Structure formats: C-alpha cells, structure tokens
Image 1 (cartoon, rainbow, N blue to C red):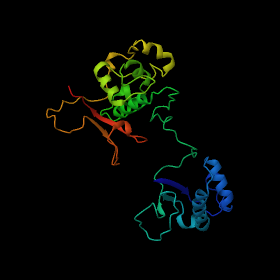
Image 2: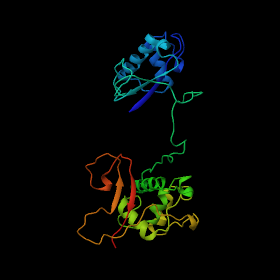
Image 3: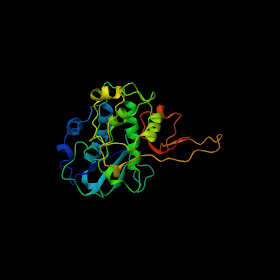
Image 4: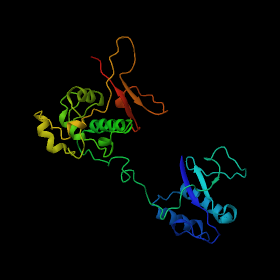
Length: 279
C-alpha cells in the first residue's frame, strides 16, 4: 500500500509542495510535481494527482486547518470521498489525521536504504555465473540481522564476501563462475569453513582469483578467530528415516508459494532460519 501525504494550505492562495500554487491549473501543477519528484509521466498518475489537487483547490485550509490529508492508495485507484467521521478502509476513502511527525526542513527526492546503512550496497556480478554466491550471502546476512542479541561485529557493517565463498568452495555443485547451489554450498561451508568473511577483506574480483581457484588454492581468513561465525544452526539428525521433517527451513512471511525447491524461489525476500545435515 502506498501512503501519500499532501499538506493542506492554510489559505487557498498558499503555496504547496514543489512550488505549486493552488490557483494554477492541474496540468501545470502536475508537471511541476512530476519534475520535482522525478516521476514518470502517465495519464493514470495525472488523473489521480488532478483528483486530489482539485479537492485541495476546492476546500483548501478552510475545512482541515493545519491538519494533513492522508490519502492511502491501493493499486493507484482514485479514492472516493466519505463524509462520516470513521472509515473502514483507508485504501478506498479519504482519511484525515493530524501529522504526528515534526515538519521536515526539506522534502527528500528519494530515500536510500544503502545510505541509511540498512542494506549493503548493490553489486554487479558481471559476466561470472556467481548468482549462487550472491544468493547464499544474502540469506546469511538476513540470518545475522535476525540474530538476537545482535552480533555487533557482524551486524555493524554487514556485507559478506561472495568472493570468499566462491574461492574457498571446491565442489562439483559450486563451480565458481559456472554456477552453483545454495544447499550444497552451505553443506561445504559447514564441513570445511571456519567462518564467513567480510567483503572489505575479500573484494569481489572473480577474474583475478580464477587461477587460484583452478589450482584449488583457497583465500585465507582475514578476520580474527574470536569473530569466527557460521550464520546457521546445526540440528540433530532425524532418527526416524521415514519422518518427512525438512532439513532446511525458510521463512516466507505469510506468503504462500507453489515452489518446493529452494533454488526455484525467485524475486522474494527470504532468510534461513536453521540448517542441518544428516550424518
């Protein structure tokens, strides 16, 4: 659900965001709005904008004073007006509320989760078929973020090294730039790794490290052994061979999938909850 906030002017002549004046035409106001926020120009977006802009022109601050008009959208449909004090669905109705947040000194054109240090920076795998390594580190990073209490060393600058995984896994199921698999890679990490590694210590550069991998020369661990960690939990083997309890558990929220294999899960946020192997 997309939440859009439009500040109501105190008087009909006051200026709104993006230097828009309420006495302008919708066409002019929409161009200013789209340019200011770097929006794509579409007829549907313009229709939604004009519907709200005309509403502000009609009522201005006379009706809502210093309150903010909170309009919740669902699928960019135009909300209908409702006169009652209470509404059951803000995705379809205008909902009025006082703004609980202090006013910003400026309206940001965009918000970057990378700049806020909430996610690691995007990386380009280039022409190397290393998506399996990127997918594996993504699951590991989610596992570290969900750890309670937080591991300060790892969570403070969370960015695991894909290159370290690629260069240190020598398996027919994880073939460097020729593709790999999360399940077999994690089995290998469990059996032979001391720890995962940070990106700042081992930068992604498959071309440079290719020769050493061909000769099965691993990259040495850089972090101090006091910080060694494998971001998964080992569980006891299932004694009953007929029991169909999954060895790997993934959390998908409340979303239902028709997939039954981990490498088929695409374009979804997920993280590993535990990992175990049969001895």
